[in-house]
Length: 168
Image 1: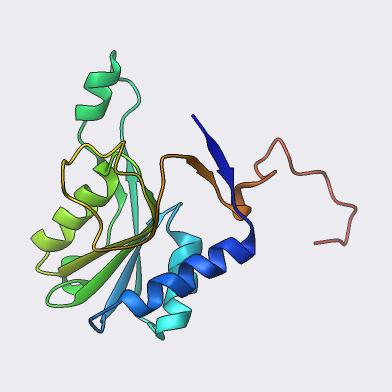
Image 2: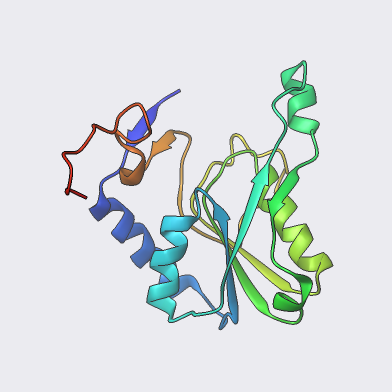
């Protein structure tokens, strides 16, 4: 699979491309962790949103086959109370729509809570989507590549060097 490494300037350009697309005023933002945290923060600042919520979703990895793995139901590790979503136009933000499982699961949960969901990603990969013609309401770019964002480069516990005392 082709990989594409983005810079912070690339991300800023994607955010700049998204903002003019919004044709409604949102009353809340629901960021999907972890991928939606950085783009969600940038969009919340650009849109002046202060009602910010978080959804943490996990799909079980123990399925024996890749087909069974794709059909697995999500586990919601964290999700806002219904009263925080009810009746609110809510922008749901993630970094990438690959298979689309995470975004569609979160969207369905927002709808079930009485919220009015709008989906938004930086990158949409229609070649991997499991949902036919369904696509995000808003996206900055279409891709067939594996995207590496600037906040993902050389990070993680195995990459962090011990800092001298008093630094950090």
